[in-house]
Each structure stands twice: as structure tokens, then as C-alpha cells.
Length: 137
Image 1 (cartoon, rainbow, N blue to C red):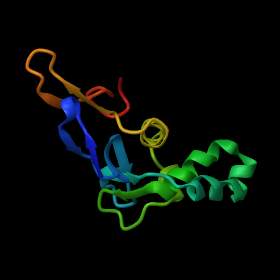
Image 2 (tube, rainbow, N blue to C red):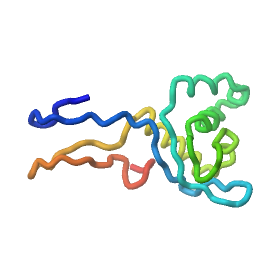
Image 3 (tube, rainbow, N blue to C red):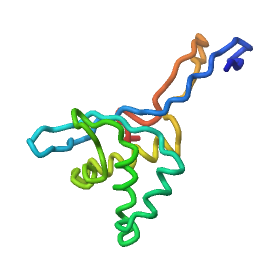
Image 4 (cartoon, helix red, strand yellow):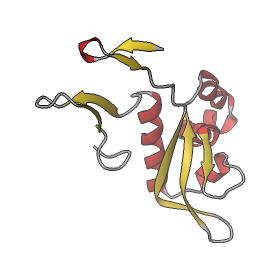
């Protein structure tokens, strides 16, 4: 889809990005002792947020909602064949907090980049608003 940019110049709309890369602060340690830090998370759907509400573990302990939800939206973590809520519940607390923040960032707040132009030369470029690492400001 086309839209006009600054001074009426045509500008292409960026395609919707549905998956986002991340790097865990500590990393998930699997049964063999391998550490998995790099992964990807997709945007959540309404179904992703509704299905965990039926889970008996979530009904008994509402704090478990984020574990089940993250287990649904993390698409890749290192070389693990699958990622599920059991994977998430065995993560270090700092990695869980990172993933909860990352989830909020990509689902509620949208992207963290902004298109700007230099006030002196008028060249357009993007800046990262979230700091040097995801989850930091």
C-alpha cells in the first residue's frame, strides 16, 4: 500500500511484521545442559489470550496465565524442537520477566522504531525508542 511521505514523496508501507527476534538475558538450560538464548515470538491473537483462561492451572493461580500465554506465542528458542508452557515454567525468573515485557512491547505498544528526519539535511531515517536492548528504556 502506498502513502505519501514528507513533501508529498511516495512512500511504501512496511509489511506487517508478525514475528520478532529476542535474546534472553540468561538463557534456558535444557536437560542436557545446553543453553538456549536466541528465539522468536509472534504476535498474539485473541485466541491466544482467551484459551489460557480455560486452563485449570490459570484458574487456580492467575499468575500462571503469562506462562501459558508465552508458551503459545514463542515460536523458536535456540535449537529446541518445540517450545511450550513447560519450557517457560522452567526458565529463570529474569528471563520470564524479560519475555513478559517483550510480549507487552510487541502486542500492546507496537513497534519501538520511529521514522524521523534530520532538521538540518532533511534526510529520513529510523531511530530505536526502546533503548539499546529490548525491554530497556
